[in-house]
Length: 156
Image (tube, rainbow, N blue to C red; front, side, top):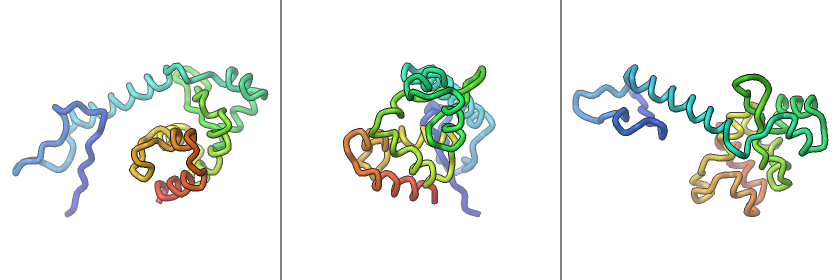
């Protein structure tokens, strides 16, 4: 049987899989728990970042209502991640013109309106973009078509 071992960038070195003659290709319960904790911590940290705003702040920034912002989040028109208490938090930078026009085509090609998936895609370095994130590439003038192609490849 073939197995795939993934390492998490969040897991400390002490819990990364060991490749020895008697080691299992599967993560241990402790390794799994560590990865889950680090993922939860990442989400908490990202939600608390200075660039994250509330739906009310986003509505004021976009010149619309909170109800419209919530509808946009649901449809993938904008990125919203569920707040720990209630409502959503949104990255402020998505309302910049260079990013705003890209969100819906990217969400469509990724096949999801999920805020965490969209945020992760836009903020993760991509080999196809010479290590840049899709967000940075868009901000630096890379054609939307290139980013949409990358989203299409990511979805498959």
